[in-house]
Amino acid sequence: MLLRVPIQPFLLVTGAFLVSAVWSGYLVSRYLAFFLALLYVPVLLGMRQATRKDDQRLRQLLMQARLRLKQMLTRRRWQAYSFAPLRYKRRS
Image 1: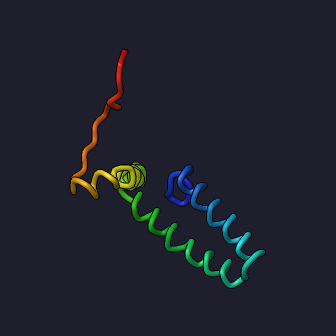
Image 2: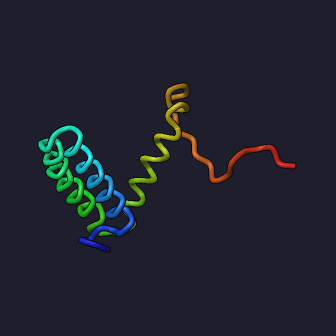
């Protein structure tokens, strides 16, 4: 845990913000890089808030988002979610 946030999500978010801030500051404008730096603080505080009582809560939230994005087509057609622990494929 680094700053009360699990290390892997912290490094992914910090790296993404750092790379995007550097490139946007170089290619577009330093104001955009400054805006991204200001935007990073609430994201970090939100991650800290999510993991305040349970360090696995951030993983649960990210898994929920990933599963909802994965099931977007099913939701559009049937207005329902369906999850299964197995992949249904032809077995030989």
